[in-house]
Image (cartoon, rainbow, N blue to C red; front, side, top):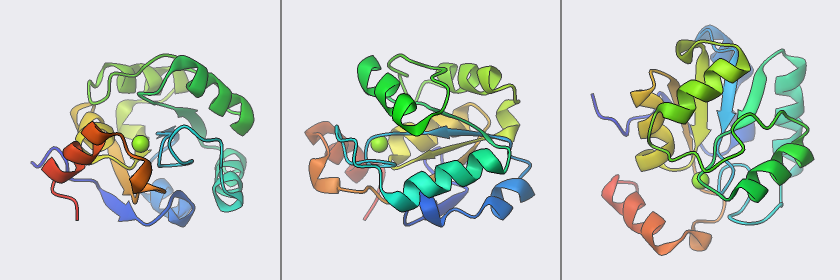
Length: 159
Ligand SMILES: [Mg+2]
């Protein structure tokens, strides 16, 4: 098994069909923040992203964020998105520890959880180690990546 291999790849979060998540038996969604639902370090959540998150809530999915960002960044994003802040700390992705904790705090099993993120070497690898589904999206603004993130993307073999 390639640890970096996502179950699916979409251009952006709002392209992910809820029917697909339901067909997988997914009930919980862990969202990366930087370059997945906003540009790195910015609160520029797009209207389609906000609509997708609101629809997910209405469809009965449980959501939270799992980020290697600063705690203040995580708490602020959860507040803006009006979702519970269940892992309000640096997540240490790809360690599966906080993925498992996130699923448990959402009230679902790891197998009923999907991680959505833009980095194969952290978001996707950690989800696979935790026994979760993983969806890769294209980074919103790859130019804003930190230097080591650019290197990790290259290692993970992304184009
Ligand atoms: Mg990211």
